[in-house]
Length: 466
Image (cartoon, rainbow, N blue to C red; front, side, top):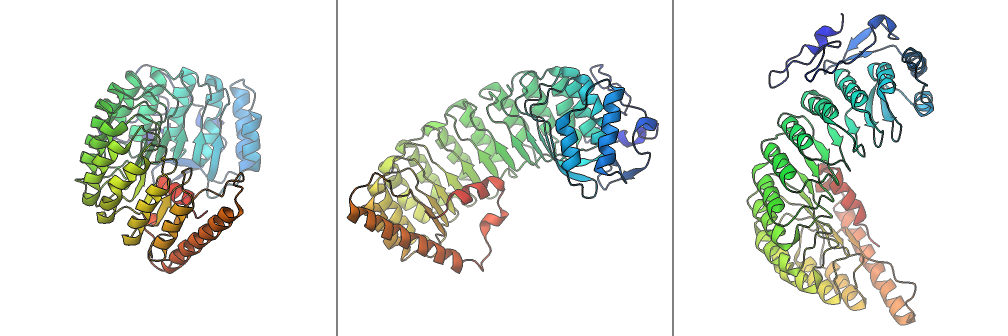
C-alpha cells in the first residue's frame, strides 16, 4: 500500500497515526477506496508531509466525486458539485468546502474522500450536517489523513457520539495544519469535555470557538486544566456558556494567571458579574505577557465591579482592548475608573456601549480623554449622552491627540428642538473631524491593532466615528 508510510508518523505523545486501512482504537474500520480507483496516481508531498493529488483540475475532481458517489451508491450532492464547478483552485487550494445543513450519512461521507484527497481548503463548514456516528468519524479521519483544512466548523451537531468525539480529539491532537476549530451549540459534557481537553494538551490550534457549549462547572475546570499548559492557543471564545461568578470565574482567573500565550479571551453573555470580575482582575494584574483582548459584554457587571477593575488598571501592562458594553455600569461606575484609566498605560480601545451612561459619565470620560496619550477607540453607543456630554467630549478632543474613533449614536429622529438638533450635529461633526485628524497624524506610526487577533479588529471596526 503506497500510502501507509505517510500515516506511520509518531505523534507528540508517542501515539502512531493509524494507516489508511487499519482499525483505529475503539474498533471502528475506516473504508477507503484502493489507489487504482482514485482519480490520479500521481501524489505530491507538501511541506507539512501531507500527500495531495496534483495535476487535477476542479472539473476532474468533480468527475471523480461523481464516480465515487456511484461506487458508494449515493446521489452526488448538487451543492458540492456547484462549489467544484464555480470554485477557484490555486496550487491545489480552494477557499471553502461548504457542507452546512447537508445531511451526511456514512456513505455520503465516504464518497467525499476523493475531494478531500485532491484539494486542501482554507475552511470546511460542517455546521448542522446531521452527522451520523460512523460517517462523522470517517470524515474526520479523512480530514486528518489528508490534512484537508486549516479551519473546521462542526457546530450545531448535537448528536455527536463517542466515536465522533474520539475522531475529533485525534484530529485536534495530530493535525499539523488545523489552526481554528468551531464547536458551538454542542453540549460539552462528560466524555466530550475530557476528550477535547486531553487533545488540547498537545494541540497546534491557535483559535477555538466554544459558544453555547454548556461549559459551566466541571467541563470548564477540565478545559482550563489543559489550557494552563497549552503553548499554542491564542484565541478562546466562550460566549453564552452560563459561566458564573464563583467557581467558573475562579478557574478563568487561574487560566489568565498561568497561561502566557492566550491573547484573546471572549466571555460575553455569561454571568461573570462583579465577584467574577474580581477573579479576572487578579489574574490580569500580574501579567507581563498574555491576554491583550478581554470581551465582557453582557455579564451582569455593575458599578461595584468597577472597584475591582480600578485596583487593577494602574498595574495592567498587557491588556489593550477591554469591552464592558451591555453592563449596568452607570455614571457611578465610570467615576470609579476615571482616575485609574488615567494611570493605565496599556488600554487602547474601550467598549462602553449600552452601559447606562449619561452626560455625567461622559464628562468623566472627557476628563480621562484630556489626560490620555494612548487611547485610540471609545464606544459610547446606546447611552444617554446628550448635548452637555457631547460638549465635554468635544473640548477634550481639542487636547487629546490619540483618539482616532469615538462611536456615538446618531441624532434621534424624534428630536423636535431645532436648536438642540443643530447643536448636536455641530458637536458630533467636530468630534468626527478631530478623530480623523488624530487618525491622520498617527497614520505614519505603527498601528498596535495590526498585531492583534481578529476579534480585536472587529471591535476596532465597531469603534468608528458617528
